[in-house]
Length: 242
Image: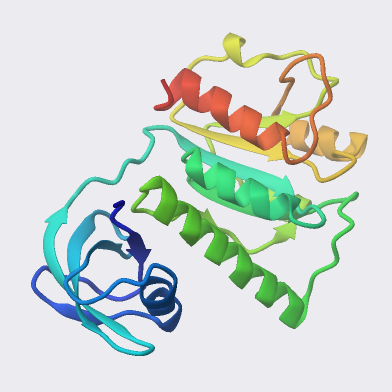
């Protein structure tokens, strides 16, 4: 049986015991029906992971004893940031999950001219919490031990001012540049619009901020398809996808 991987925000050290959060305890005890003595892996996002064993299985809470530490992080040598317009429905959730699996380093949700999703206040904070849970779940599944940074959603204008990646790309189907023509960078940012894409003015603003307009081919890709395609390509060219 596959050994489950569990994320916790707690400080971890070999030989110590920790009480897992309610949601993680529920998953182990009620969903997976694990009992005392069962093995799992614990990580807290700071790097590496711990072998662990359930030392107490209560009705609602599980305690685990930490064993040996492994430094393995499984991170790509290429630093990648995905800056993408917030899309409707579960499209954005899907992008977060798959981008995490593909090794993205940072994700910046954007409000742009054609963003139809209106989020602020308590509703925004609730959505950010949901997005963070999706990232955690993806890391548990794909065996990453460092969580991608989820930036606070921001206006495209603010992002353009603060972006510091070595190589900057803005994706749209009218561009001419191709990845094969670009020299290997140490860090990459991929700027992608929401449904309907980025406006001509936004593309021009990105280009004026040092972004190169990039095409992924002759077909127009959806807002949830373009980032996954682009991340796969840059990781294959310059990262760790074989």
